[in-house]
Length: 86
Image 1: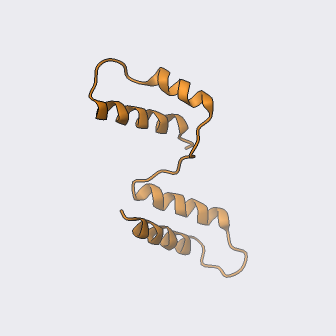
Image 2: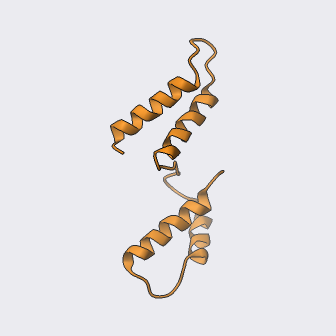
């Protein structure tokens, strides 16, 4: 999904979440925006992780011989699991 389409999807979600002109529920809007991201296949993660996450990822990673793309995918998926906030 392109950045423009993603922004449009989030805008629609926010608009549907809270159509009031006064006393907007920003938490409801934020939840709708995150749900739109997840529906589009994205997840919001912080840019920099706490130092302990890297050690936890190293401990949780698969070991042994694997293709470089498999290794990168494993690192990415492990970090996402460790930082998931659901």
